[in-house]
Image (cartoon, rainbow, N blue to C red):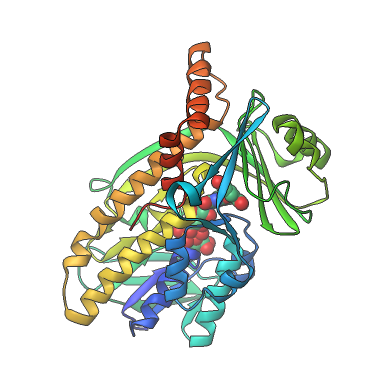
Length: 389
Ligand code: RFL
Ligand code: PHB
């Protein structure tokens, strides 16, 4: 089998890249180790920056997002029993769209199927070969049969546990990592949102977030311990804890319902550099992970894909290698800004088990500064809606 770009992973990075390449007449095949149903069943990100939305439009997959997505002009930050609105429209003239990652994935999968492009699901033992040179290969097994793809480039879009990053020699790869001493317990429930906008709550008992997927479906989170299991958190305990962490008005609007999904995500940030090695280009979670506090994971995957698409388009259209050579540096510059913002949001809003009295007073001052300063709110808004590409 031959193709111009072999894409590893059918998450948002791989599917979006595939669509943009098809648009430019660049052939590609996607290899995914899970089934399509499994990929669609993962509940993850929910906030789309306008730059990400524009890219979905370019890929021809934005129509349903514009119809069904909810436009949000701000968020609420809650602490000390009060809410403080961060008014994105007033502060930076922009907004974000609330639309779930599984819906984006579904829209991209449908576009791909309509184009007749190939995605091989449930492939096993994917291995990358000769990535340092100009004729890389991908070997894998499908239904027990060994297969091989010859290509010009491999796009490693296979998330944080994939094979692509591991295919870069250890002597070349630099990794930076921050593990946070807590996780998020997330619940999906068929109940209206607690508030028209997202509430990010800081409380002595820990962080909480009230998000949503639609006018009838909520996505709710509480900070939990790293060692907690989902079974430690029956629905009643979850709702009780969520209410304790919200200001009284919001707590009264929490409408408990049976959880449709419940999972724990440990929080961490990590970046692997460089994002290109020979013919292998990494994009999305394969190269970096952010804690979800800034809602940046999916959006960062989209900005990598934007740079990578431009690099491939320049090469296949004009034979120019400039975009390919610059890819890692361009992408990493934006990645680190999103890592910084996610790290700041996480530090500002969570309860750290080891924090000293001094740390807690400084954190409190940070929140009070945010609540009272237009400059601080503008910095938050500018980053939350997404920095320019
Ligand atoms: P994905 O979505 O992980 O997709 C990678 C795909 O590659 C496949 N794969 C392989 N395929 C073939 N061979 C192999 N050897 C393979 N190894 C892996 C996987 O099955 C998968 O289908 O990465 P991508 O496309 O870069 O997209 C990134 C986003 O998914 C991610 O940044 C966000 O979802 C992060 N994230 C969140 N971000 C937010 O902004 N808000 C959130 O609330 C939020 N919640 C989350 C999250 C990530 C989570 N993970 C990764 C555990 C909650 C969770 C649980
Ligand atoms: C979500 O809706 O799942 C969500 C929203 C905002 C975040 C993280 C997760 O910062």
